[in-house]
Each structure stands twice: as C-alpha cells, then as structure tokens.
Amino acid sequence: AVPDYFTQPLIMVRLWLHETRRVYSDRLTNEQDMIRFNQQLVRVSKRFFEDFKQEELHAEPLAFASFVLSGVDEKVYFPMADAEKMRRTLDTKLGEYNAVHTRMDLVLFDRAVEHVCRISRIIDNPRGNALLVGVGGS
Picture: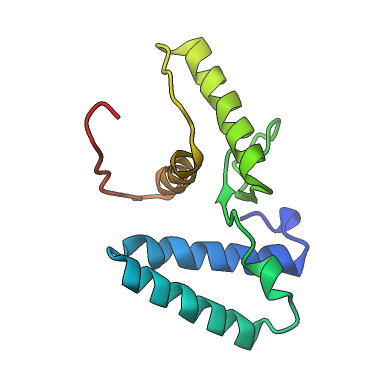
C-alpha cells in the first residue's frame, strides 16, 4: 500500500481487516471455522477500534486490489467501493485483455469477482502462491 493513498484512518483499518481475512480466513476449509474467525475479528475490531462504527468497518464488499485505479503507472493497492464498481472495473480489464489476446468470454458473478481480486493479490506478491481447484470447463 502506498501511504499517499491511505490518509483516512477508516481505510487503514479496513485494509487491516482485509489483509487479516486474506492471510487467515482464506486458509480455513469449513464454514464453522470461518464463522468463528469472523466472530473473533468482530470482537477484536470492537476492542481496538472502538472509535469507528462497526457497520462501516465491516461493510461489504471488503476488497482491495491493485487494478482499481486507472491511469496510474505504479500498482496501488486500493479499496473497491462497491460490488458494481468491482464488476465494471473487471469488465473493463477483461475488455482490455480481449483486445490484445485470444477472446475470453467470462461471466463475472459476485464470487468470481471476489476470487479474481484474491488471485490478483497473490500474483502481485513476491513468491505468492495458491492452489486453485474448480470444475473443469467452468
């Protein structure tokens, strides 16, 4: 994250929540553990960030990505304001890709958009890695 883009404390705390989810929650494998993790995250945020409205801290989508800002030479890890903006941004990026490469027809539903943001984060990090499992042809 570039300090010039993170001047509001709320954005910094949301970035911390986002990174906490990516580092810990993304590794959990069952719904019960994910629920327990989210409950713990809420407890911690209430304890250490009591000056903030919890609804604003935990508002969805809680997503940051390096492809949000256009016209910027450097990769800036920036928050995505809402799900519709996320989808429009990815549709634009997909159009840019399709203009140069073999056409890729993708339907970007909400979960797909979230996964693209996660995968982008992994690719941007040095030595980032992930195991992607899915149904063939999907």
